[in-house]
Length: 494
Image 1 (cartoon, rainbow, N blue to C red):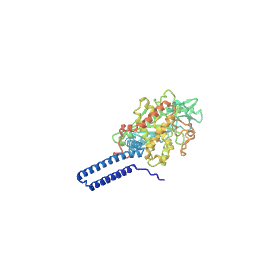
Image 2: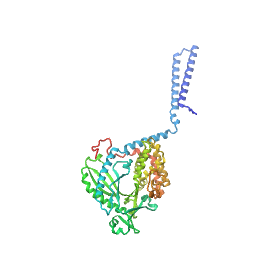
Image 3: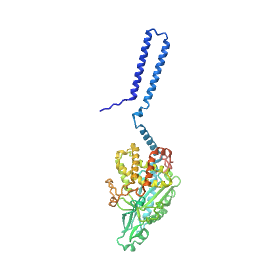
Image 4: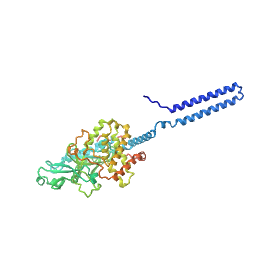
């Protein structure tokens, strides 16, 4: 059944026209009656009075019409103000994304190619010079992280590379999920204690004494692989490889190796204008062991900022699911609209986190960044991708998805819960086939151990960020510290 509503704009226009017509007819009849009675003595005066009255009536009608018509478009749409605010937010966010977040595919592509070439040469040399009694390079490397998953922000100057290692022949890794106290969960969630087994216990002394002394620690008569000792050896090994290949790139760039907070960083600084777009790149090299079906154990660099300096962290290893993360994102991309905004949402959330951090007290800034670290933000996105239908990720619905992101985090902080997406998750899509050990593992809460007061403070700051987002975007204009894609590159190949 069709429902008709009164259009006030047309209604008042018709009323004014009708009223004006009736008034003019009344004046005309009155004038004709005066002429019939011989009242034409002051015809000129009567004409002026008639024109004056008619003009006054038209003016009054116009004022009434304007007063009646002006607010109608707002009265007719109660959500007008809300829609205007949403449109303003979206325009500001889109503009900020294009100017300060979105990376040039050209620049990013050339940076990745240059990193790949240098790291490839390092691994090639490392594999050629190996000893059977120690750790050896498998011969390949894995590119992981935001630069390779298309959600990096700021500039393409940081890259993460996994370097797989192999155990000596006959030695076998025996990873076991670590049990740690809740107070340490933010640092040690999902950690592994990596035991090493030999065919016979007597062979530790006869055959593998050198390996045991260099890479293992003995706990309760069992050998455990030490992350600290593996990192120490790996740093030494990469430095020797770099000394071999350095001359190959001396005309292109200056390469140095440094250790910052136990992280091995390969610095690549361009010489002259050889490297595309003049970007100084930092490449983090991470030694890993493959434990089956695209899962890797990482030698976790705990460093000096974890607050756990008094604990023995040597036996703890991290778990890396990067290959599954890339597979999951590729699967979603195939299902979602071609202009899906899921990665765009992640980039915007990371950028808003950084902008908000600048306004915080130094004592809270580090905790804010830890709670909203890139891995936690990506985990939140993975959960949202399962909850929201594919078609709802169209780019035209960007603001709705950003609002979902904020709401997801608000509820999670209030519940003090953000569950690991892979460990112990029974809702994973069927195409993700984790090894049984990790599929049946205990669920891990990534926010466990932070404390309710800290999470409440983070929630309050998050809500404030949502309200103040337009003002923050207007005030924040970080400079672009790399050349735009529109500039011509002098070296299109490496």
